[in-house]
Image 1 (cartoon, rainbow over the protein chains, first blue to last red):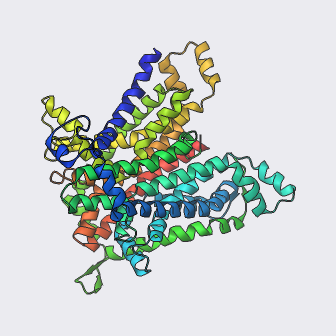
Image 2 (image 1 turned 180 degrees about the vertical axis):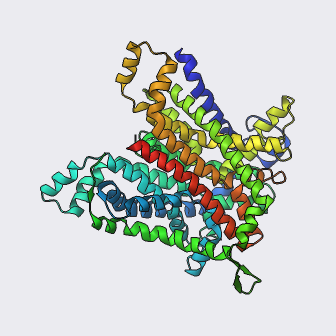
Image 3 (image 1 turned 135 degrees about the vertical axis):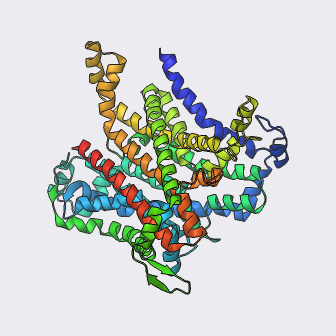
Amino acid sequence: MIKYKSLLPIIYIIFLMLPIYWLINMSFKTTNEILGVFSLWPLEFTLENYRTIFTDPTWYNGYFNSIIYVVMNTVISVTVALPAAYAFSRYNFLGDKHLFFWLLTNRMAPAAVFALPFFQLYSSVGLFDTHIAVALAHCLFNIPLAVWILEGFMSGVPKELDETAFLDGYSFSRFFGKIFIPTIASGIGVTMFFTFMYSWVELLLAKTLTSVAAKPIAATMTRTASASGYELGLLAAAGALTIIPGALVIYFVRNHIAKGFALGRV
Amino acid sequence: MINKTTNQKAWFFVIPVIILVAFNALIPLMTVVNYSVQDTFGNNLFFWEGVKWFEDVLNSPRFHDSFLRQMAFTGTILLIEIPLGIAVALAMPRKGPWVSVCLILMALPLLIPWNVVGAMWNIFALPDIGLLGYSLNALGIDYNFTQGPIAAWITTVLMDVWHWTSLVVLLAYAGLVSIPDAYYQAAKIDGASNWAVFWRIQLPKMKRVLTIAILLRFMDSFNIYTEPFVLTGGGPGNTTTFLSIDLVKIALGQFDLGHAGAMSLIYFFIVLLVSWVFYTLMMRNET
C-alpha cells in the first residue's frame, strides 16, 4: 500500500526533471551533435558553451544585471511592506479593506497592459535602462505580494506580545526592531524568497525597461537566439545556469516554503 | 483572529507602500485610459474619440477569438492542475527526510525564468532533436507542435502543468500537514473509509489554501505571456495567441495605441472581476 501510494510523487518528480535533464544534456553538446544525431547523453562532452558564457561580458553581465535588480527589488519591497503589513494586521483604519484589495489588484494586473506605459514613464523620468527602473517596476506586483504574505505571518503573532512590550516601556521602534522582527524572522525569509522569485522569473517588464546597460540574462538569451542563428547549446547552457540561483534560495527556505505559498495563513 | 483596534495613525505605516505602488500603477493606468479614448494621426496630435475604441474591441472577432482561447486555456489548466496537485500532495510523505527532497525538487520549476521555461520546452518538444518530440514520433505518433494546432495546444498545456502544478501541490500540502492527528484518529475509530476521510476531513480543511491556489492560478494563467510566446510564438497561425500575446502584438507591434489601450482596460477589468469573486470567497472562509 505504501509503495503503491508513493508512486505518484515519484512519477510526478520524474516528469518535472525530464525537461530539465534535457536542457542540461543539450548544454554539454556541440551544435553539430545537437543538430546531427539524437542521443540521450552527450557523445562528445564539451564545456565550450559554458566557457563562452563565463568569458563573454555580454553574457555574464546579464547574470549580474538580473541579480542586481532582483536584490534591489527584494530589499525595497520587504522594507516598505513590513510597516504596512503591521498596520493591516493590527489596526482598523479608514479604508483599510479597500486599500488592501486595491494593492492586490496590482498583483492581478497583466504585465502586458503595463509594458508600453512603463516604457514611457521610466523614459520620461530618465531611468530607462537602469537597474533601479526594473527594481521599481517589479514593486508593482511584489509589494502587494509581500504585504499579503507578511500580513498573514503577523496575524499569527498574538497581540499580547506588543502590549506586554509597550507596558515594559519599549518605544515602538525599539519593539519593532528588537522584538517583533526577530519573532517573524521566518516569515520575512519566506517573503524575501517570494519577492526574489517573482522578480527573477519576470521578463516582459524587465526586457521592456532595459536595452544594454541593465539587460537581464533572460533577455540576453532571447536576443542571442535570434541574432546568431540558433545556437542551441549556448542557449541551453545559459538556461541551465539560470536554474542555480532559484535552487539555492529554495534550499534556504525549504522548511517554510509550503507555509509561504499558503501566504502564511495555514 | 486578532482583535484589531481602530487607529487612524496606522495610515502613516502604509504611506510608503501607497506612494511606490501608486507611482507604478496609477500613472501607467492613466496613460492607458488616455490612449483608450483618443486617436492620433502622429506628431503627438491627439483628439477625443469617446468610447469608439471600446466598441471596436468588443465587436472585433479577433478579440473574441483570443478571449475564448484564453478561457479555454485557463479552464483546461485549472481542471488538470488542481486535481493533480491535490492527488500528489495526498500521496506525499508527511514526515522524514524525503519531505524536503520532494519539496525542493517540486519547487524547482517555479523558480526558472519564464522564457527559460519556454525555451526548455521548445528544446524538449522539438520533433527532430527533443526528447518528447523524438520519442512520440518514434512511437509512430505524428507530432509536430510548430505545425499542428492540436499538438501546439497540448504542448502549451503540458508546459503549464509542468510549470505550475507544484504550486498547487505545495499549497495543498501546507493545508494537509496543518490537520491535527486527532482528526485522523477519530476517523479511524469511526471506521471511516479513505474516501470519507478525504471528503469529510481533508478537503474541507484544504478549502482555504485551495481557494488561494485557484486564485493564483487563475490570475497567472490569464496573464500568461512569456512561456507560450517563446514556445510557439502564438502559432501555428493564431492558435496559441492568448490575450497578453495579442495585446503586446497590437501595442508594441502595430503601435495601435487606442485599440491597445481599450483592450488593456477590458482585459484588466475581466481579471479584476473574477479575482474579486475568488477574493471574497477566500475572505469569507477566513472568518
